[in-house]
Image (cartoon, rainbow, N blue to C red; front, side, top):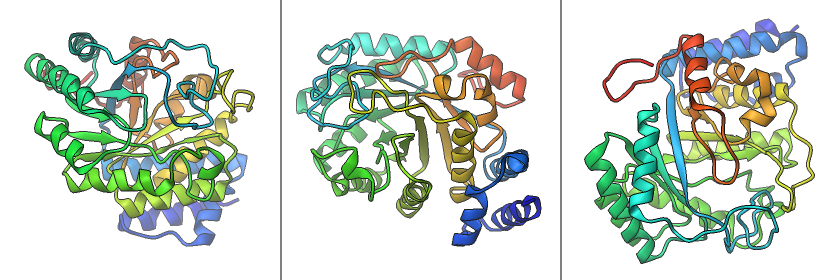
Length: 334
């Protein structure tokens, strides 16, 4: 039984948010046996409550441009190297993006992100997104995010000028595993975009996707990279294999393994917002609510980029049933 070891580690973290786990302590978390998982999850929940309270980050996205991406990320249905059965379309109009944001805001979203396929946005892309952001800012109090690929200093400044507060750019996986997932750009290019976003004052949302074939050591490696970069929010995606992609035949993660990843990230990133994103419905299935009791304190609502999400009201009911709080535009709790 490792109950006492897990509790001791969690106690150290709650006494000092900058506490650095030893390799033995990380191994204790990773190797928690089935009969002690309830203790692991309870410890992770206690750390979350200590540093983040009972507030849950609710975010949403729009796939503003779909398909024909120049990058060869092995999991992605939008890559031009793959043959997934998805909708392909150019950048949506500012009005279409704005209306989607307004509808999601009515449903409870507090954050809304523009997401486009491709390596880097063009000047024209930025102009359209600026127009959409202006409409959304006028009609809602949504906090606006963008996930447009790699940034330059100039593009970052343009996005900040129009009121984009958060920039999202996943590293996807550990540096040591990245060459097996993407070969069309380097890990350093992604890290540099995160650094540019931080330099320009964005809240930075940066995480990864799990179940690609990475090891537990590589999951730790990614978490430590995110810690060193001092990102603010960490999306946790779980691979939902899409036919036609290089990883289209990979098996799903087991639900309890996925929950253990969530808990591990709470131990390693005690004061960060950990957001359950794509794949949670198919991987966690009936255990989706457990993620919010195992260290996560955020969820993405609505649809994802090329796959559908869960019914919005089911997610809102889940938060209520767990006694967790999410602010609405009126300042009340859902």
